[in-house]
Image (cartoon, rainbow, N blue to C red):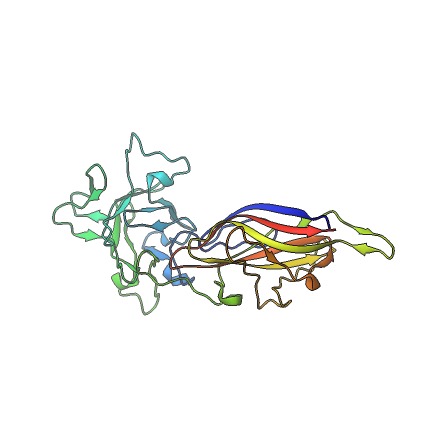
Length: 316
């Protein structure tokens, strides 16, 4: 029997969410692992909330990268490499928010609306660059901090225009009315949640576009569409796992019922790893023209798999 391959190119990473037929990234980086509103926000009295769970903010042992934003605040760029056009040269030079690997933050972030934000300093000066990282001044009176064990931010950053940015309600004694904090899975932070089908992460999934095999009805008596035989993915597992649910239809408008091997939404096709085919259940995916899939990711610690391509084998 002659078979064909349907190959789609995608990139998926930590905490992505896509609905409809267009790809969209949500919840990347390593902020807000519990997917709650209160564990992603910092606060400023003049501009309100500043959201760090934008899909780009990432904490590492050496620095922060990405962009936080707020409705009245606008963007806060945490690293010169995170600018729309990365630029770590003159006139501003190399700037970023540094991490000394123990959660002690220093350095500078930039806002086009309000200018520089200092993450460590005192009344007369902020951090200074030593050629590789940022160092707090002697006798620093404020410094933003991340607890390496819990991943919880605390303390303040300073801006000359709008004043203090608080990373934790405990700094303000407001926790009784607004329990906010910024939380990361850097190092010892809590792992991402589960709760999806087959123990996959309920918040880490992607739905593909609709793919047309262009095989209509033929023969006598007429037979319609294709038989979908197997699925595989290409990319890097990063210690995690990738699962699929497949939906097939003879109408480009659906309905789309994403099912696993037993024909229900509670199971997933789980290939053994990248470049390993897994057979699809023909009883649920035979004689259909259109196909789409839903990817589920299972994390390993703070890393998720990276899926670059998905290949579906089908035959007339």
